[in-house]
Structures are given as C-alpha cells and as structure tokens.
Image 1 (cartoon, one colour):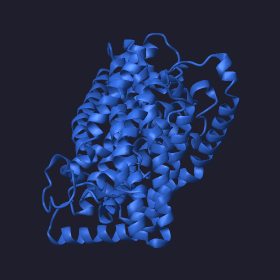
Image 2 (cartoon, rainbow, N blue to C red):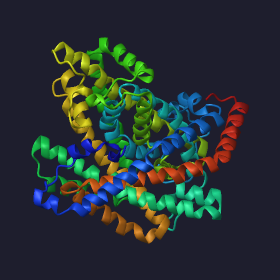
Image 3 (tube, rainbow, N blue to C red):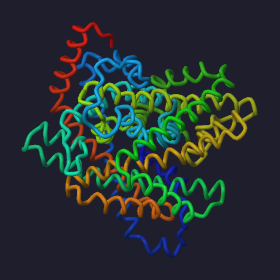
Image 4 (cartoon, rainbow, N blue to C red):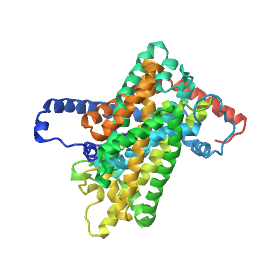
Length: 496
C-alpha cells in the first residue's frame, strides 16, 4: 500500500532528511499556509462521502454478482497455485496473469499492512480491524470488476504494448461524453504517483537505513535510484519479473514472522479476536483516551485504512492487470481479487493480531498500557515494538519488511504513473518519464516534506472518484460478463 495513508506522526517518523532550523522554519510560513490548505482539502476528500462511496460500490457489485467474489475464492486460489488450468489462454498480453497480480501487489502490500494497521487501531480501537475486514470482503468485488474491465477495454499502443486501466475503460466503455472523466483519472494518477509511489517511499527506506545502520541518506538514495533504473528501463516485463520474485519472498518472510510470534503467544490470540469483535459495538479508547471512543470512529478508521491498504476502488491495480497475457477478462478478474484477500484479510490481520497480543505479553512484565496505547509516536514503531516483545530481534522483521515493500511500491507505481502519462501525451513521453522517476527516487531519499504527503493523498482520493463512477456506470457489463461465464461453466460442469 501507499505510504501516504499514514498519519502525520508516522510521516514524521519516516522523514529523516536534514532538519530545518527555527530560522528556516520561521521563513517558511507561506509553505505552512499552503500545507494547511492542502491538508484541509485532503480531509475533505477523504471524508465520509468517499468512504461511503467505497463501501457502497463494493456492496452493490458484491450483491449484483450474487456474492461470486466470495464464492469463487477457492477457484481464484487454485488459479494462483496453477491448479485450475481449464480454458487458460496465452494469447495477447506482455506478462502472465499471475505476474500481473504480483505487479499489482508490489504497489499494495507495504507500509499500510505494517504501519497502517497500527494507525487504525490507535485511532479507532481494535474494532477498526473488523471494518478493515468488511472493506476487504467488499473490495474483492471492486478489484475483480476493475481487472475485468481493464482487460475488456484495453488497447494496444504504438509500441505494441497492451495498456489499460480506468482511463481506458472509461473512454472505451462509457463513450465520448465521458472522456473528460478518463482524463481526470489520468491527471490525478500522474499527481499521486511521484508522491505516493516514489518520494515518500524512497525517504522511508533511506530513513530506516540511516536510523538502524547509520548509512548516509545520499548513499541509500543513489543505490535505490540505480536499482530502480535497472528495473524500470526494461518496462512492464522487467517490473513484473522483479515483483514476481520479491513480493512472494517478502510476503512469506513477513507472514512467517507473524505466525511465529502468534504461535509463541497462542494463548492470547482468542483474547485478541474478542477485542476486535467487542470493539465493533463498544470501542476501546485509543491513544490519549480521546479518539476511537465511538463506533463511528472505529468504522471510519477501518474503512479508510483498509481502502488505503488494498487500494480497491482506486483503480491503480487495473493498470497492471491490463498487461496480463489473457483474453479472458473474468478469469483475470478472479485472479485480481486475490490481491485484496492477501493484502488485507491475511497480512493486515496478522499484523493486527501481533499488535493486540502484545498487551498481554507486556502485562506479564508489569506494563499497564497496551502497546497501541503506550504513546509510541509512530504506527510503524508500535508494530515494531509488538514484534520485538515477542521474539529477539523481531523489530528487524518490520524494518526489512518496510524497506523491501517500499522498494517494490516504487516499481509498481512507476508503471502506474507511466501509463497515465502515456494516456495523456503518447508513447514518446515514456523514456523521459522513466528518467524523471529515477531522479525523484534520489530526491525523495535525501529530502522530502509533508507537502509531498499531502499531494499524494489528495491524488489518491481524487483517483477513487472517477474510478468508482466508472465502476457503477459499467456495472452492467461486469454483471453480464460474469453471468455469461457462470452459465458457460455450468454447461461445462466446471467447479468454481
């Protein structure tokens, strides 16, 4: 997930560039004024109307497809594992269907799964985790629909590459009168990508190595810039190849570490689940005792962080799935919805359980407050502390996870930003954009500020609006293709 979902305290934890003197700070009142304005706009965009639109669209699609996104989950897992091969095709596209999934996951599995979960619990109490689950359950239908439409309405560009995503299914599926909406999505993606997927990611990685290994920021920045250049200059195939290698390894590494922690503290796991379900109707006050004290706060934080984590509704993952080597939109949609399942229902859940079992461990040591109420400034710090309290050196699971996940996010969002720019300016912009992206990696490592965070978060929110409108407008296509596929499978006596 994009780091831009983190609270301001988390941003300060990640940003470790050269500090400003009081004189410099006093001379930047105008910048502070601009930042305050952007933060206000950000709060307005990511308010209840958008959260309800995310929930509502997911619910509408889930019910409209007769809960297919839930019923077909075993079938989708079989596709990932290579067990369900009936009807598979390898006709058009640049990367395999599963590689498309890992490319999309490279941009979603990340700091949101580590720090974003802690933020949700801090601000909404344990009950927020339940609403993250609900967002994921409904988000599977959203992600399925995005990928289905991406393959159905994709194009082939001048370089012979398959390109797609919300801007293309808006243009090709909704007609000429809606082209402005396609441009709106592309512009918002172009704004969000350098911040969400680059500046703050690079700075987060550099900060970690500076803090833990005392590696200078410029060294980390230069190293990352070279590595990123090496990957993205090869295009979508190169990005998919690296993502298909790194994402599974890091996911297994992090999931494995979390399972070890929970196995060691198995007696506290039932209590953690009890806190989550109790928090749905009777939320526990969060850090400071003044937030998270209402059902609405738990629901808002769970929905917000859940959507940020799996990006269902933003439309970004559809850009990756449009490059899949398939002519079966329904099949690709089934694979795509696994991204939400893996990201939120597995990784985020494990993070939440590690955090919620830590209080019992700390209590045995005489510590009164749960780790998520302990006053630790950063959400990532809370997750790190929870791992550290359970196994020696456990904090390195978080440190390594954050570093690698942030790096893969840079790769995934490079593709998203490139596709948005190509939609607006054509293929001639691609080489220049890739050079720009590499430069931004270095700049992000050595210096960034809250302005980048604000712009990234605003861009993300503005991406969601056009995409959700398109999903509702093209829901008839989604329902018809899904129903047709179900009838075909029934006639062939194939199991979901």
